[in-house]
Every structure is written in C-alpha cells, then in structure tokens.
Length: 458
Image (cartoon, rainbow, N blue to C red):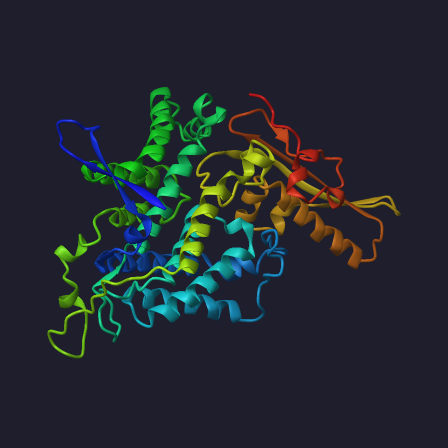
C-alpha cells in the first residue's frame, strides 16, 4: 500500500509539488512525539468536563430522561433502556469524575473506557439528544481508548513515553477532516445552492434578511467545509487555515445557540494538524511529566510494529466513516426531508423546520370513539423538535399510544397523527397522510417513501 506525500518546494510557485512514494506501514509506524496527543487529551478532557457539567445544569436525567412518558431509542438499540432508581444519576456523576481523570491523565485507560460506554449509553437512550458534536466525541473517545494519550503531560505514576506511532495522530486528523469535508458535500444540493436554505429562513426569522450576507454564508460555508481540511494538512497554508477556522467557528457560535461547545472544540482541535513535536517546543515532556526520580527521561520507542489485525481494524474504521454518511442518498436522495441518513452523516444546519401543528389521536374502532393527545404535554421540547424532523419518531410515539390503549382494554386500535411543518421556507405541509394508521406504517427505512409524503415545491 502506497501513500503520496506532497512536499512544497518554494513560495514562488504555489502549485509545484515533489511527489514521493512511501510504504504506508513505515509512515503509520513512524515514531513521533507524544506531546501533541498529550496536549490534545487535556483540551479534549476539558471539553468533556464541560459537557458533563452542562448535563447537570440542564437536569438531563430528571427533566430529559425521566420526565417524558416515552423515550425514542435508535433503531437496533431498543434494548437500551433507562436504569431504575438513582443509577443514572450515579453513572452521570462518575462520567464527570472520569472526564476529570482523562484531563489529568490519572488512571487514564480505565477512565476513558468507562466514559466511552457510559456516555454512549446516555447518547443512545433518546434520539432527541442527538447532536453532531456528541457523536464526534463518542468516536474520538473510542479511538483514544487505544492510544497512550497519558504518555505526556499527565499525573500518571508511569514513566512518560517520548514517542508514539504516527497512525494515532493521523487517525484523529482523519476524523476531523471527515467532519469538515462531509459537511461540505452535504451542502451540494438544490436547497443550499439555489434556495440558500436553510440560511435564508434562519436569517429572515432573526431580522437579517440581507441577500449579500446570506450568499456569503451559504457559498462561503460550502467552500470552507470542502477545503479547510486540505488547507490544515498543507503546511504552508496551515496558519491561515487556523485563522479561518477561528473566524468561522466564532461566527457560528454567535449565530447559532444550539451547537454548544462544538465550535470551540473545533478551534482547539486544529492543534492536531500541526507537527507532532510542535507542543514540545514550549512544554518539554521531561520537564512537565511527574516522576518519582528527578531528571528521569521519558521512555523512547523507535520500533513500533503495526500488526495485520490492527491494520485491518484501522482500514475498516476508515472505510465505515467514509461510507456511512452516504447511506441516506441511496435510500431517498433527500435524507433531510425523509429522515433516514440524517444522523451520523455530518449534515450540519442543513434544514429548518417550523412546527405548525402536532397532534395524535387513538381510535377505538369497536366502540367508534376517539381520544386525542397533545404531545406537548407528555414530551420534552427536545423530543418535539426531533419529532418534526424524524418521521420514525412518530411511529414510536404511535406504538406507545397504541400499547397504552390496549392495556386499557381497547382491542381494535388505530393511531393517527397530524404533523404539519414548514420545511426550508416552503409552504406548510403534512409529513405523512393524517388518515394513515401509524401502527401499520412500514418500519423499514427502505420503504420510507411509501408513507412519508413527497416534499412540497417552493
């Protein structure tokens, strides 16, 4: 397997490159300074601490998980249920402790393994909590389980490790590159390029309906996402790219109030695109690493070996990250409207839905009676915001209502819903036929077009 490394020759000719062919194994196992990974661990750990504190502040468990009458798990993860009693509160508190340990590098491996499974557990409990940066955090935590990120700048009692194999840095870079690039690919569609949606609707609702600003945000965002990964990887343009990342993410933090720590994380994460020994120039490992013996130098390993099994696992992970975001296009060609493929695909700010009406009704077909339900009274705001985006959440809610009716002695039950929205500035429309019995709607995502209505034209 070969890699192409492009080395810049001189500033006089920006597009002149020297192409070298190198063996991929030697590149992946090349010893590099562990300082960059250690510094990233500290920064990432602080972001995880912030996320846990935020969960406590919003009352994630009492208000988000215990208050609603039903949760909306992901397909295939229906077995993940809310644990009884105070167990969820204990798990979340231990998550905070684990995040602190990750930051400090104390019992790092145990802490990050626990954090991965516990954080993923809370994430999988309800679709309503989905956020791209939470998904990214789970992926990064999962990857860092297999990396000695406590090798530098940690309070661990073990000796510092001066070098790590290069594949660890490259894999983290790859993951961030995918977030940016696929975010750009998602924007190559009619709504974004022609209608400038959802930016036009978002800015109009905030009283900033200025065509020049909207065009700049729409086309500038597209160009930024598609190119920033390359500019960060290319050394001569790296510093300019970092400045661009800073401005872009700061503007996002100002314009959008629902993206949390994500923009600030992406700013700090640009450190991964610098040379691996960049951090050590200011913070030498042997000076900051605690040790029982004075002047003890870090361990250096220049003979990293990448087993075939590890190569296979790395290749599989990379392929999955490249393929999964495309799944929605093979199902509907418009995942933003139909639902399947919206999540886990880095489709950030690709739609704006304004709720016009949400109501459900349970029909007792034997007694010819109707019971109406207002989901606003039994679901959280977060769940409602997701319900108007994901049609399959309506099916889940209908199943809950149908089962509840059967438990009350109603044998012949039908559940119907009326969910009307305005999608990316289009006229109000129903997501599905209000006369459809949601209990009989096909649950297979490949059949989504059989019951979700076509999108209205603008």
